[in-house]
Length: 370
Image (cartoon, rainbow, N blue to C red; front, side, top):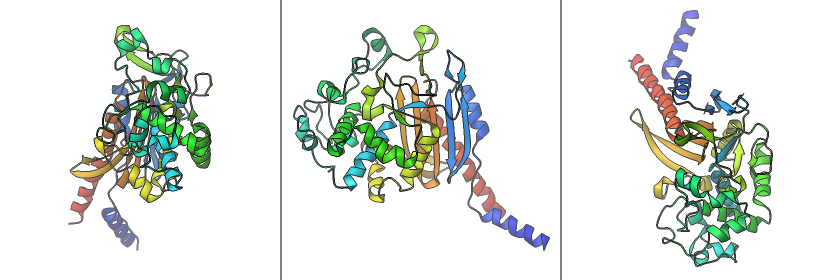
């Protein structure tokens, strides 16, 4: 009987779906070699296989990052905004093909009649680009006026995000914070609530995301990591430039923790936030492989295709990555408070290690059966 049980167990191991442990040693080594400062979480099939923090949340006070550290998540905010838009579309309160002016009658310029909600979502609006300062030297010498002077969302749209399109709407991908700032105002107009209230009501409270919210210059957020960027002129890390974080609004003003982002990902891909048709539309690759608020593409690992939906974010030293291997039920969340590491590369490297090892394990098990 004991021998029979042993044979059955061996057989089950050989025919079970191939899998691999999270490459903890690889992640630790990569983080050390690249001077990573932040938190990494890897989840497979609902189980967290890796969670670890590195570096300092405050260099001044020598406070270490932990899994409970709150980080600025920058443009991951756009994924939250896209979900809110699609929820109102499902309720027939918003029309993706409607022009901006249907919802914002005072929108200045011809773009109000030519640009649709969908074109805002997929960054093909053709609006003038919000981010005119393209390099650090210009920022140091001239400042970053759009973010260093306080402004309401309506003022931001009036000053930076209106007028005539610079390209034909729908024709060209141009990653532009203006698109999501306008979407934030549309959400407020349609719902009759502030963007922050809508976010709380529809996403943060229902999902129990108690460590996620909007940054404001005058608001104190406990456990929020300071952010630092590399400065060649200073020979290392330096404090980020002073800004009003609320000026990123619906395009990039959120903070969160790794566990909260993981819960958001689970709810999104688990069908708890959007209907299947809406999620498919959000994650369908368009120009530049961009859907609605996320990039979506196929990467090849060990000769096999794997669907990826990812949402990176970056504002100076604040970096964030929500990386989902859709068909593999695997999520990688990386949050950082310096710009020392390319998080796109870090997440992809983890995926290659993880699924490459799984593929190798599958070949070994297959060979053992013959």
